Image (cartoon, rainbow, N blue to C red; front, side, top):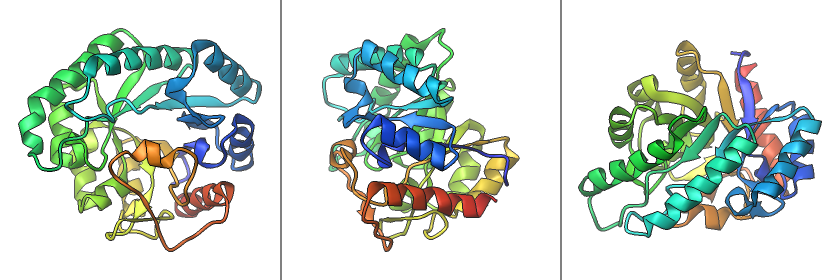
Length: 279
């Protein structure tokens, strides 16, 4: 299983860009899923600021694989036009960074209401993202996430079948936290999977290093290899890092049995846990 290419949410290794670059190089990771830089979400940066980030990464021979955007992480009843404007801005940032992929979500559904009642509205909104990104070389990728429309594999398929240009990011931990069995979910979604987030969790919701939870990550990686997948993006969530509460909105990650005193130690532990599986 050693033909995989490693990517990572490096804002979990450290707040500053320099800390993130160091973590990438010392862990032999070439690709970044960029989400937070110097304590700020990527969505809040200007084009000029992002050009500086890109120049710095290029000088170190590092690449951005994906924009770890917060697009779609708003309520289905929230103002969508403002969100479309943010999407357009972030698409410009993706161009600047030469990113190949763009992570997004499918909107939080009110807890007291049925997800299915919002299917048409979700698909309409997601189709607007596709229209704006039409003609670009950037692949829009939907991540399964707790609380959003696409929190279960069947509803993820609603999106991918209706809008096949939107590919899937398969996150095992998020499915586990929704009480979804990951192996069967992967087989169901396999035709649409673009890449994987590597995060594991126990059925009680606690996030743990890869292979220690109920995500069946070793088995999933075998399936992933069979369909030609090669990008693995490490998203540790093994300790509280800058901006975690804001990123998660309504849902909350639980740090599991492994407790790390620093962001960097938690990041290294997550990467090493994956390497033990794939080597």
